[in-house]
Amino acid sequence: MNKLLILTIVPIIALGCKSSENFTGFSYDPPGVTNTTGVTTKQQAKRVIGVGTPKVWVGNEFEGARANDFVQLNEDTYQVTIYPENAPINNSPWFAFSIWSDSSRAINLKLLYKSGKHRYKPKITGKTQGVTYTHIIEQIEYDTTDGSVTFALHVDSAKKTVSAHFMNGILFSDLQKSHQSLPDFVTVDTVGFSHMGFPILEYTSDAPEPGLGANPVLVLLSRQHPPEVAGYRAFQSLWRELISDSELAKSFRNHVTIKAYPMVNPDGVVNGHWRHNFKGVDLNRDWENFNQPETKAIRDALVSLVSESEYRVFYGIDFHSTNENILYPILEEVVTTPDNFTQRWASIIKEEHPDLYFRTEEFDTNSPIAKNWIYHSFGADAVTFEVEDELDQGQIHLLGVQSAQSLMTLLLKELENTK
Image (cartoon, rainbow, N blue to C red; front, top):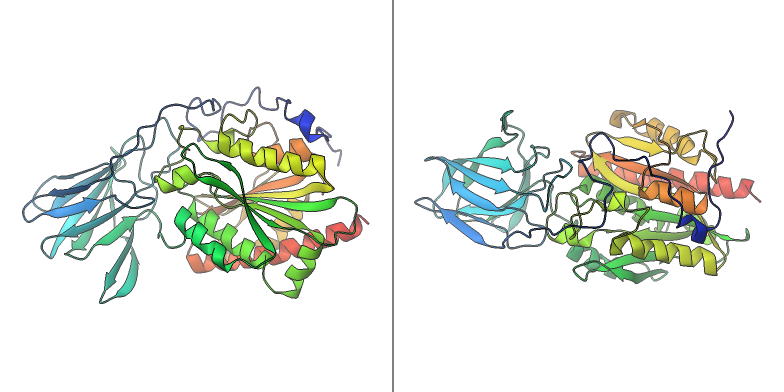
């Protein structure tokens, strides 16, 4: 097959290239998504609201919460209204709030979204006699007129959390705590700061003996979009397998440097955003103009790495979530280094996980997303790795671990072939 050779080798030159002049957004993007200069976002008021007699209470005074108002509609029905950080916006209506009551009772709880429609199954987390329990609400009544949902819920004096995803291990504070369990060979650096002053974190596992000239670098990105928790959990499991004590992982780390950026949008995560950063920008549309500090920090870190030292970006993975398991490779006819690696890796993932119904959909490189920036800047292959929103945590973990193993095996073979 004839290949299209449309890449820029020198990263500094690539920063000035315009690859998305005709790109105005994907089919699911709102108007103006490629204008990444930023707008003013309205931050939710952190508060506790009690309504009715006896009172039912809702609170959003915790990290990652999103609930803007709470009212009683009738004797048994209560409504939580959820606004996005700004609109128009992708339909990823994140919600997370605590709820309790002065009396033990059954209620109907309605979730009403402004500028959006229901997407994520409500997840319940609570404690009984000191033991944490979780539950997914499967029985919901969907209103096609306004995109809201209503479901039955038992409330009492014990607080429980209602959220779009289970909150364990997904917050910025959880990420910071996890540094204590990182092995000594992993360094944690701050490459920049978000609008709100949160660090843009970079994890590095440096290869001591690449032995192939320029040191190959694997780039991992996650959590550009705060609600895409399934993709974040897949990143976590893949990353942990890459830095594990297995013989395969040790061999891989001897030859490949890993640069991981686990939470690209900390402002959005902390504030329970649906999609955007503090300035109302979809960060995965800012990988051409770099108007936002989060994308700019990662760009500068990687460009500096390859321009001032013996490193070369070899492959990139950007983790996301959507309504299915899907990999978005670069078009097969586009020449990358390594060439068509994603297509080969995808075949293994599909074979190992037939029950997950993974599919691939190739795209050209004209959109201002992270995957395409990696290609245009370094000539490397890259993929957008999408995990199904409601995939079970156990399945996600297995997917992450086995994907890491096949990734390491394939990349090591690729490096061996380039000797």
